[in-house]
Length: 178
Image (cartoon, rainbow, N blue to C red):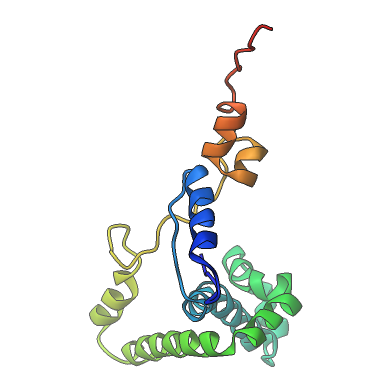
């Protein structure tokens, strides 16, 4: 939740109660912090995708290189190819957050680049440290598939409220006799 500085305590409490009603916990965040996080998770991956696509497709060897297209390459370039106008607009409306996280990303790329000229063990260690399943730096699972049987309503209003209103998916509701 990002309450306006002019929001009343009553309005914030009302939204808190609504959040609790659907079984969630309120998460308060400043607008600038939110924009920075969105830049890290959306705008920078788009720019990375654009950079890979641009570096390869603008190369004079692209006609030969394209013969080696792999599913992995296509997946990495998917963001650049899918909806570039909308993503570019998002970058333009969030320049500060995007630039800050892009700088962090570039630092990591430069670190990897320097390690390529060094000890293979150190390079391997650096590349794998954030990829290990048990690593604290690994993000949570990105499996966003909706479990079978989950109703559209739970997607729209939240699982708890949908269950309150309509029962659990797949269960028959008992009808009250009049």
